[in-house]
Length: 152
Image (cartoon, rainbow, N blue to C red; front, top):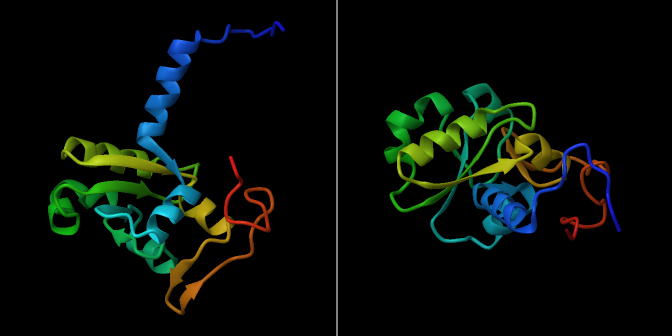
């Protein structure tokens, strides 16, 4: 079967290297949820948003370290040797990308959580708020309503 692309698809070796590289620096909300639920050792999930956003709601088990403070405060908040996952608001924000870059520059193994807080909440995963642990209804455009994962 022949496909017609405006730009030809990469050869398999190039594609494999590209996608492998992406998976080494990106993760998604269901994988982070699974890692947090399994209490994966030396994993630190970092909410890189400001105080108002953190207070509005954040991931259970996350630590709060706004992007602008990473260079000066990471050593106080994240133990040396930890693997870090950064998140910000959502796909329309590159705060988690900037934060991941800062952690990488400081020598941490780091991944960015795709979808950010928005997709965490939209997929019905638990959120910590001032009133305690809560879950929003699952948005069926982002996740199946009957299970946590999309089985992809």
